[in-house]
Image (cartoon, rainbow, N blue to C red):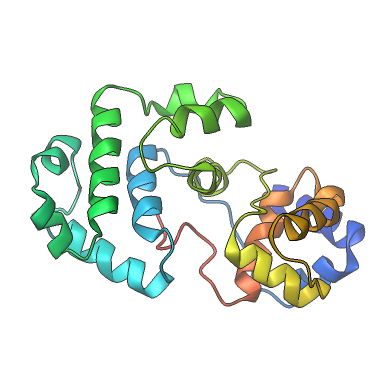
Length: 210
C-alpha cells in the first residue's frame, strides 16, 4: 500500500511527525474525478469552519432539485440573491458563477488537468476569479490525490506545526521555517499535511468532504 510506504518514510524522517501519525486515524486516498464539483466546494469552504461550510453547501445543493447537483448552466442561471440566501457572500456567489462558466468552456477537463505540472495546474486554476494558490493546492491534495503538495499558507497546517514543533514565528518567517521542516517529508508532504489537519480534529478532506 502506498500509504504504508509513505507513513514509514515520514515517521523515519521526522520523529515529531511520526508521533502525530501514530496517534492519528488511518487516512485513505479518495481521488475524485469531478474537479468542477470539488472546486465549488473548496470555494464554499474558504475562510470558514468545516461546520459552517457543510451547512452552506447543503443549502446550496438544495437549489438544484432533485439530486442536488449544481449543473453549470443552472448555477449561471441563479440570481445573486438566490445564492446569498443559501449563505454565500456576494463575493463567493460571483466566484461560483466564474467556476461554472469556466467548466462550460471545457476548461476543467480531468484528463488534461491531471497531466499538468504543479505550477501549470496552479496557473490554470488561478485564472478563475476567486481561485488562489490555496484552492489549487486543496484540489491537488484531495481531488487529484497528488502526493507531494505542501500547503504552508494554510491556517490549519500552520496551527498544527506551531503546536507540534513549538514554532513562534509569524507571517513569511513562519512559512519559511515550515518549508524547511517539511523538506525531509518529500515525496509525501500531502499525507503529512492531512495528518497535521487531523491532529487539530479537522476533517481530512476538502472541508466539507468531496
